[in-house]
Amino acid sequence: MLSDFSLSPPTSILNKFAAFFNFSRTGYTGLILSFVAIKVGLNLLAMAHFGFQRDELLYLVLGDHLDWGYKEVPPFIALLAKISTTFLGKSLFATRVFSTIFSGLIVWFTGQLVVEFGGGKFAIALACLAVILSPAFAASGYLFEPVVFDQLWWLMIAWSLVRYIKTSSVKYLYYIGLITGIGMLTKYTIIFFDAALITGLLCSKHRRILWNRHILGSVFIALLIFLPNMIWEFAHHLPFLTQMKELRSLQLVYTTPSNFIVQQLLVNGISVMLCLAGLAFLLFSQKLHQYRFLGFAYLFIFLFLMVMSGKNYYILGAYPMLFAAGGLCLETWTQKKWYMMRALSFAALTVPNLLIFPLVLPVFSLNRTIDIFSFAYKKLPFFAFEAKWDDQKIHPISQNYGDMFGWDELTEKVAGVFNSLPSEQREHTQIYADNYGEASSLHWYGKQYHLPEVVCLNSSFSLWAPSSLNAEYIIYVDEKGGDNVRKLIPSIESYHKVDEIENPLAIEKGTAIFFISHPRPTFFDNYQKELAQKTSNNLPDNN
Image 1: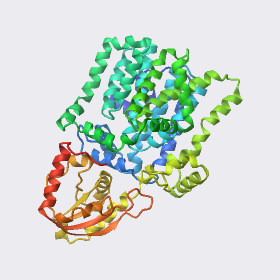
Image 2 (image 1 turned 120 degrees about the vertical axis):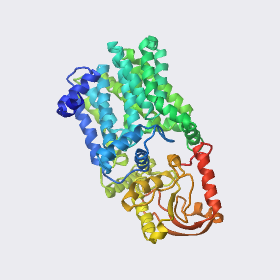
Image 3 (image 1 turned 45 degrees about the vertical axis):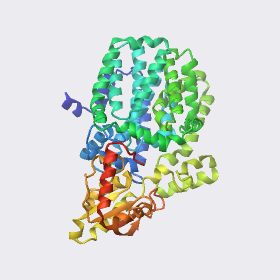
Image 4 (image 1 turned 120 degrees about the horizontal axis):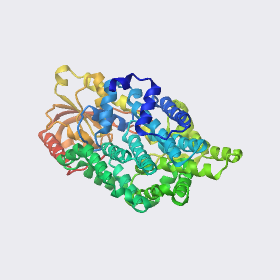
């Protein structure tokens, strides 16, 4: 059966995919696929520009250390990393293939949800283009990160629930369990969405769904899929909780309810108008009264994340269902014969996002992108926030883009230091990095320079760090340009700076490379103490 599937032509594969999910049979498949093609095409245009992003490198490293869990994320992203590097290669293109496929599927299921709501061509076009051109979805949909996969799982759960209400087919309840289980292996935030949907159902006439005996089967499937990761978490002292405590104390503390609200109004650009229309239509329209629980669910998860100081992207997976409802809203309010009104509303909901599109998706060359940022900063000061980094300064590009530069330079310079040493000295030299970005780049790019495995106690690197160090020499990558290595003076014999990252576009600009000679016993003792604290989750990672 599997071999038959793999040898089928694309149309046959698509038919089997549609048959498995039992999509509504309409004449809109070609239209939805055209928008999927646009999304995929834009990703293909952008994916090879610039370089690997900091977090992408980390997830690729996780793929080289397959396990049922990690400090930052569950194991799904690591498995995809292993599959992509094994079968597709190690290029930027290969790494971002899965993200592109899942981005296309988000557009597909958004279009299908419009169809389930009863929408036509105009509603489908509005909703699909909102997903494609929304700054948040454009920025998160091409990088190899768990966010894009998480967004699809949320949307598929909403779609499955709508399909169950329309058909009463219990297989959709089991789909929800299957998707939730895989979602839990992707990002734990899917629990928030499921909880919000349950609360929304309790507030609607569909609460009887929750007493359906097949719900227990769905829950069992989800727990069975999630069980290995749950066991891993307990075996490793629940690093997820430690990570969340650290995140809340170091980053989320700066996210106030007012900031969260403003960010939600900005992340989708002009498409926020379609979201608001969709939310209102779900809550108050008789046409979508059966699916009012989706509107309640969005409100519940919005309020929960606002109160808990959640990051603005945690809720992104809930927006495609609002886009779908918003598309139907405008289609309902504008009759087919009102061509001019539909054309104007279509332009108003797409053109503004087109103007800022290059600020979030690198569809142009680096020089052209820098020029666009410069123009936006000078002529459109409202968009200046895109170029403001955590240091609160305006830079030539966004911080997300800045995280794509400097990694190959760092590895090349570290390799230059290591390979310049006499062979007998190289045998007693270890490489140490302060943060996971530096360590990930040295692991990823270092293979071509035959570098030894980098040592790092930040993030998941502490899980496979050596239990002790015994080096006579250390090439130390200091993220603070020398401040950290100076703290080591009492425990080392000598050190000197050999190089630093100079790329002016890199967030890591100024990260310094030091050569340390003859660490003292206190250095090794301190390393073992810190490793013990990190692996027992008594000490948070500062990443």
